[in-house]
Image (cartoon, rainbow, N blue to C red; front, side):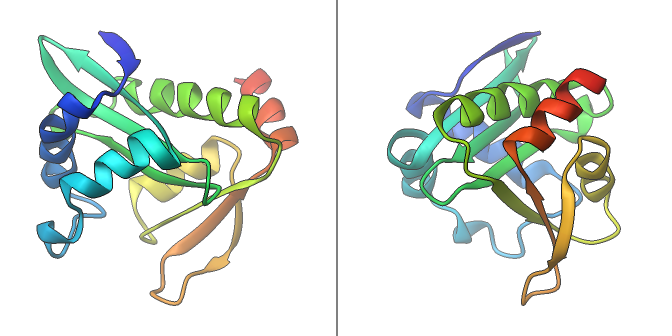
Length: 149
């Protein structure tokens, strides 16, 4: 497995992974455009991906401007291999090297993603207006979770 920074040329592959997920699936694939990916990868933040056998198996994107995690997805064919955990670590190591501002994310309740974030040290802070579970992670919380691992 190869982990590296996501490039603009990777956008079609990132989109394929995003559209393949079974949990937190997009209700309308047109909601996220190539321009959205480009904005988050270049202007708003930074992204990483994992390649295995020449294909993108997962990716993660941190939004430094909005102080949130825009994406962390692993293709279902590559689940439970530690890819999400490694992408999570790369993304948050970078994020907290840029700022000490807490980061947030939301995910559908009752999903594997919800449990994943709890195990990684994220703190439940409520629900969004759409009913998703909202989590937050501070720099200190990341340091504690990172070294407990």
